[in-house]
Image (cartoon, rainbow, N blue to C red; front, side, top):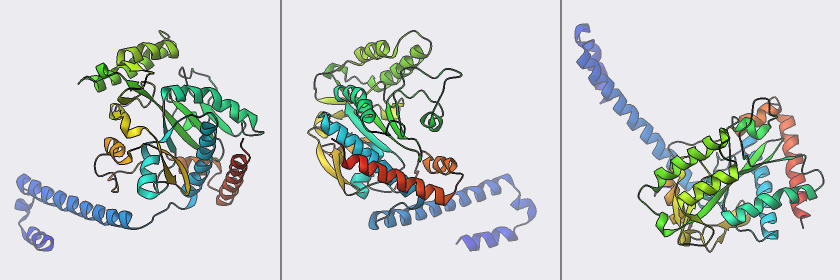
Amino acid sequence: MVFILSTIYEKLPENVKNHPKIIELVQKFNNNNKFKEIESHYRMLDLIFSSCEIKATGVMRQIQLLSLELLRFFDLVCKKYELEYWLDYGTLLGAVRNGGFIPWDDDIDLGMIREDYEKLVEVFPKEVKKIEGLEDKLIISKLTQPHKPGDVTNELDTLNNNTFILFFQCAYIKPFIHLDVFPKEYIKDSGLTDTRNALQTQLQVELRDNIENGTWTFDEGLKIQNEKMQFTNHKTNNISDAIDGLHNNIHNRIYPTKYVFPLRKIEFEDYTFNAPNDTDEYLELIYGPEFMHIPKIALDHNTTGFVKGQYDNNKKQIDKAFDEAINYMKKVNEEFN
């Protein structure tokens, strides 16, 4: 059909071929066929993705394996202090859909209720300091004010484009990998209004602006905004993303507490970690009902490019660095107490 119409078009007189209406029709036809071609490719990739076991290779896989060891360390610290966390966002999706990392995922996402999150912020650096040499290899970041001109920044800041990131992050410096921990809040029933998502986005922006201009300290501002959102430290029927979590209206979601607690165990890269109680309902809230299918847009944090840049794209150096870092973290985890 496409060939026949193209042949006919070529035989048309030039004044007809160049007529605006004819050009418009041809463009619509071509765009429609291009869309069908893209959809066909997507369906083929989705079939492969859903029916085959696919793992990352090369630097991406090395990033994932070192990230796994950092996750194991995080898990050990949480167990020691009886802190509850769960795999979140892409990490949880990978656990459910792939039994491990999504092939193109290059970080770790975790969620924690506020009370345990604040305890983690306190104890995690202390545990790092107890292990010889580890403090020099890790970056622990939880910004309470933005960087000022002339401030010393680090690799984590560079990858974040010096964005004012409020939530807890931990990174292995070189080769670079990182994990994010997102605070979650219990929200009172009276806080479940029709406009709460728009209000939360407004309060997130207001918090950051007032910290940046010196009106509030981080702690003052967070307390003020949490009261406006009617967040509480007491367990309620619903959990909300926090004001100091991801500052994007897409992520201002409410999770029924029964979707999250009691936590259960899930397999991730041959280890077990904490997951929400009802992973299907939880993931559908985040990614929609088609979460088990390949996305039409796949995003990463360009960690592979960043790591290659750390070693001038020298494969031998990269391989050696990852081997040493992974073995070091394995030893840390084996000897943790």
